[in-house]
Image (cartoon, rainbow, N blue to C red):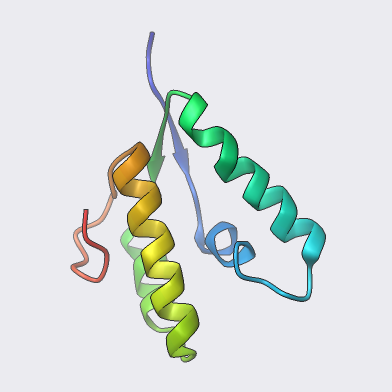
Length: 87
């Protein structure tokens, strides 16, 4: 069976930490909870890493990069070569 690739753009990752849209955060958390049961490869572009690396809030930036690293390490590959996110 072929593995499907899912491209997750910056807003998907950001919804995991949003405080002013609890319904979107909850939906995004549910999505990430089902990922282990799926045969999906997560793909992110270098632009996603660049946008998150440019985040001014240091705690948010560190948190988002850690989430991406975990998700990508667990489920797939990064479709980028930016060293800000370890593959």
